[in-house]
Image (cartoon, rainbow, N blue to C red):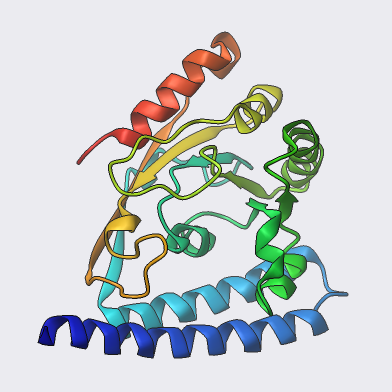
Length: 236
């Protein structure tokens, strides 16, 4: 009982600081709108670093990246990631090079956070309109790659509980086949410390594992989907 109370207090402290950071950076982000996207992304990355530092202090949550050496940081690339938590949507901005994220349009309804999404030019898609979403990803994703940015896609479309199978949607995979750029599969256990739909955070270390998706041109979508899903379910 005492442990749960302590976790509740620590999580509350985190959210107070986290939302303060969101409000401050969203408002400053509006002022920075005329500046180049690269500048705005770097500014928001600073905000994410502050939130992760506050998460470590308040909730004792840290992370460790494995296989980072397999990444070519000099080439704009695509990340296909398992989605368990809000954590990875934030932390990837500090782990990988400057990036554009594909996110569900419902997130723009969150006060202040919608300003941030606009500032960093996230690709907002309606998951109920698959063809329109695919067109957005193909056009805006390609534009981001051409400008030298990375693109982060959660092909499962929504957060899943740790251990639950991710149903891979085809939109992100079609985009991957279209682009002649490196692709990396990313799996992690963020849902064990920052679960979907829960307020209380659990102390611990989030492990992130990276794998290059190779020979994309010669693989059919079904094989890419299977390989992606198998990596997402891999246990360490």
